[in-house]
Length: 133
Image (tube, rainbow, N blue to C red; front, side):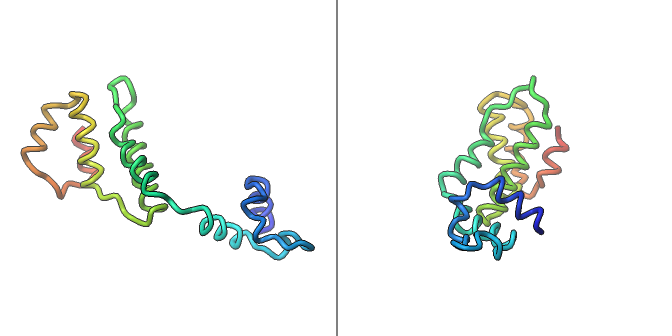
């Protein structure tokens, strides 16, 4: 773990770890796990504004000249952020609904959106939704 500890000390400004440092021994008696836990506990809180901004990123315009995989990667990033950082899971239904709003605002896939809205397929998974394209 010494290598990981050294990497953390190089990557993270000491001001964020100074609370763990001993005046004589520095970080000698502090493990990498202790450092990571401290960083998460002290600085890992996600605000409601950050959560909202993350979810709203699903509404960013997608254009046909952008690879479709970029859209799916953004959706995955949004879900991971919410699940891992905010301790809440972004459901497929929420992600699909927000993606549909984004498509509708841009008049993209309008026929599909109209058809889907009429079917009220709330139990559709994100994988099934992606397969429709």
